[in-house]
View 1 (cartoon, rainbow, N blue to C red):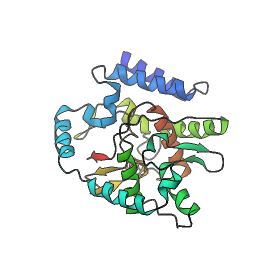
View 2: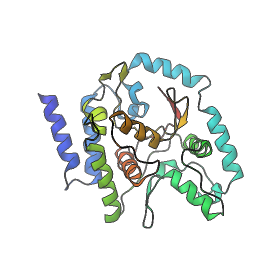
View 3: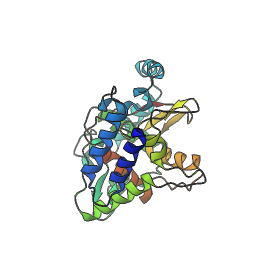
View 4: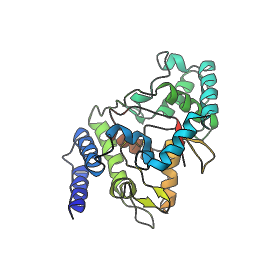
Length: 267
């Protein structure tokens, strides 16, 4: 009963119109601290491997050898060096900690959208968000940004509206299975779904793009959003849709202060 009351209190706070982003984030962190008292908050950047010791050992062995995202990082570095990106991003690729950010014209600007903005500003065609070159560039930037603490803000009322839309998306049940993002990664975090441990929502954004074994390739965060929507038999939005950019904005703010550790591997 105490566990159910805790969940109800968190959901109430997170959906309250009077709660601001920092109040939401504090509630998020406090919930997972109480739910997993033996797991340091920063450990949640490792997803389910923070909660399953046996699978963590297998994952660490893979990461210490020749992780399957290495080629994407190397290819992304070559693309960075050959393109206009250094001029657009102040000379350094270690910038992922600042994204998504708010822009008055475009709304929530993710790293991928910023990369295409850079290309178009320099007379180059935008990349398809599913293209390998976009994923490789993102993987290289994520690698260069490792260890940087996430630092995104919600600077004004318009940004707050986008944040609130992302938050509402996260808690809204949808699809034939009537699941919300929070159903698996908040209410049932730490439990098993079939043979897999459900990861905590805290730290979910830190390790993207990610090589997933079921994809057999490195893919972006929004591809995972699409997959989750498909799994609950709900409408999946396009990569870099307003809906998914706002969702990423909310989730990233929830992980403010946590260090980036991407790219990485997941099942």
